[in-house]
Image (cartoon, rainbow, N blue to C red; front, side, top):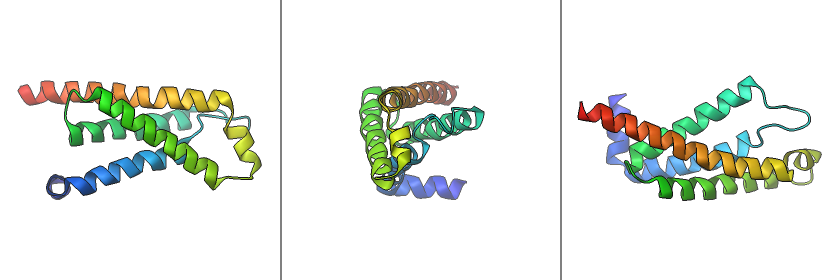
Length: 133
């Protein structure tokens, strides 16, 4: 674990690029929360919480504390980009009609960046408190 930590500390651009691409990846493959065929269930909730919690942790590690506005803007843009990738990936399929409803799009765009900022805020607060002890 220390080797990974040291590597990412010495190669910040690679770590940032990896994390930003991960946000796009998750935005593409975790969207939507649910649809007519696959409702929102425990496994999907777990996947959303873990995936975006890791993103909040990554923001804390890479950008430090008190960057909530930056985290929100970046996560909003990259989550939207991931959703566009999902649309392009499934272009012409019936699943696009089920996935890209107004409710699914708005709920995902509102909830995910907000959740990332909340995870980032509490992780940063916890790490700051822990580092001061």
